[in-house]
Length: 295
Length: 183
Image (cartoon, rainbow over all chains, first blue to last red; front, side, top):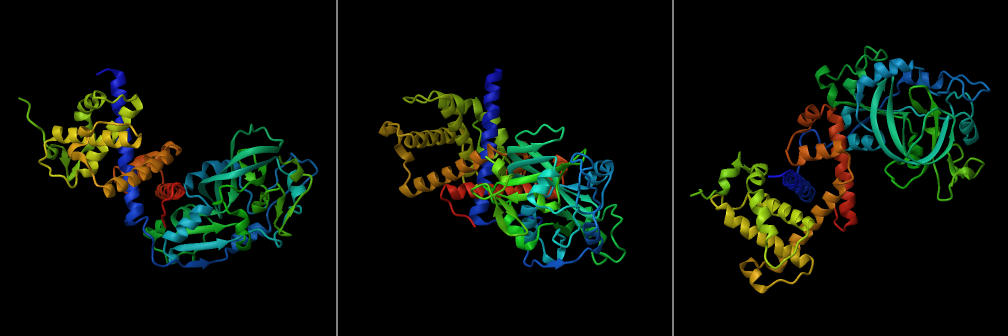
């Protein structure tokens, strides 16, 4: 049998396998066949709100440096400043590929409530910012500003005591790029918040208190989840990444090895149909010099 | 004289080993389909029909008598699939082609609905990443568990779970667009 025939046969085999897999999925959707034990819906979901005082302290008293030179010392508002080498060598090892928004929804829908530790440590008006995080200041103090849409949360990782998530956006327009990075059709950056198993979160985490999570047996920690949610509850509709058509303006700072969202969730703002930018503090859409740059 | 193989020869642990079956009968089916009388078919049509034939064998394997001799059964299946394809494309064919393969209207409609659902799912799969595709096939074709998939692909169990969750959500969305309602 010549190569063309072999290729054709392989293609047939691939088609058939795909068709069988598709059929099995269709049957599952039609018959609501129970999934295996790790994907079954549980009967109760109980969300326990805990305030992580350590994380709150770091967020409220974040390390910032501001000077008149926009390019010097990228500003990060929030928790402890980590050495980026540490981040790359250690924290990234503790990665788990779990996205933020959609995966919070998944975890909440599929895991027992008493197996979720949920925290909402959003930055708000009581947080310490080096500058007022309005649109003009964000534009001035960001290395990269672009317009785009959410694609996916690639993975969450442990940056103790915080969880961060590597997020991917499509890029439709670059408004500012004073970094060395060549921006293409998509861009990845880190933002605060995410989901990890308790095991992943506790691993090598010096911020876990002695009396914390002691009621969870060590061999069960991979069945429990920590959710750190950085988006305020009352603003979640403005950062609804399940809406595939929403466009956002995103403000990023270049921290050398990694791009980070500038001033937490303030650095992502949804646009309305007239390309006006949502303002969290006034709950209004604003038309200004920055919005007028958007095509 | 070559022994007439039966379906049972290709069963393993209660399920048909479709890859082994394809490997053995691909050539036979290809020649029959390619030379089917009175109908000119493109390479794409031939590929589609052959794939559909083996899929039909797999799908019916649980209900059909396992002592069924393969070649005549294959011939009947090939004829049915070709007739279905001709009907779909409004190609006229002679009445004697229908013969005893006539199906009542209810079965035809159900079959069309199922075909459309499968087309939608397979079209959605064309746009997924390689990792997502592999996870999908390992779970829904090879029936691997989440833990097994995570070990095989060297990724976390959470990533497998989330990928499957997203795929299902995406496929459901496409099926809904096609007019099929799922919760």
